[in-house]
Image (tube, rainbow, N blue to C red):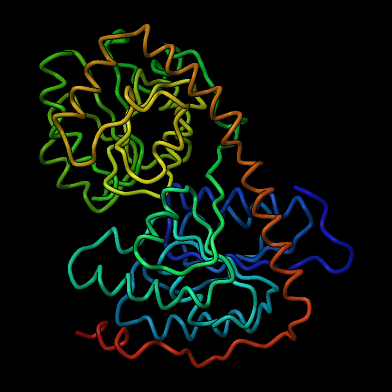
Length: 399
């Protein structure tokens, strides 16, 4: 990152609802880079694994009691957040994901520079009335975001198509090269799966066990994959609300590794990494896998094409929610070790040049400077403690 301007260090407040996986890693890497650059970093978040990790970096962590999704407690959560903001008095607020973006913008209401980073659109995650409500809020709430940061041009395009009139920046996700790198497959695999056949093809899927990540689609495809590659094994790395349902439908060749502190060894052990998501902004798991030199198969959702090296889409992308296409792509690559090796090399070169987390951190730093410079003429105003929640939204939370 560039040097901070002279004078007091800007006070940055990141906000998150309960998060794990990719969003937690993005917040952690941004906090790390901003602390190194001399900024004063505070994170408002609920209790969970993220809080102690941030404290270990030197960030100030403030407890914000909040649920993962909007509900009847929203008004109280916004009120608590407004008091937290009044106490911290940040120069800039950076809200991550839909719930924190909702509460943060309601609490601040444009009084100080506010960055909203959706990390995939909430209205794509749900259906029916809930989706329509989420979209209506995003259109309405865009007025209170100084900038909406998308992690891919496709995510931005989805927002524009949906009628969100935001002030946009596109800052692609990045990985830490010192954490994600190739390793001896046999050695890593022996440590992780000491009782497994070392020659059996290994497919790894890293992600929260939830509908978004599509592990159910992968399990549906798995029978057809075994029909062509009978000794293949699949490892699902992660935990989440769909775990029991997935367990009930998984054959013996599928291992549930649970949530792990370090996903890199699982990428390094894999012959192929698969992420069958139903929606994304730009998933981190494929970037991390490619940084480890592993080939990937992804669904063609927002950010997927942009995360791949040019020309690899026909080999590595399949339509979402299509187990037949997924089975064909996975089995085809498992049966072609030469192609897998080539894809792994190309993927690593691409990620190191285009998706280094340091590039993302520098782009965010530039954005902060722009917003803070624009706000120098604006007198600081303490956010109001009484939140303003649109009446139709407030009523729907209790319906």
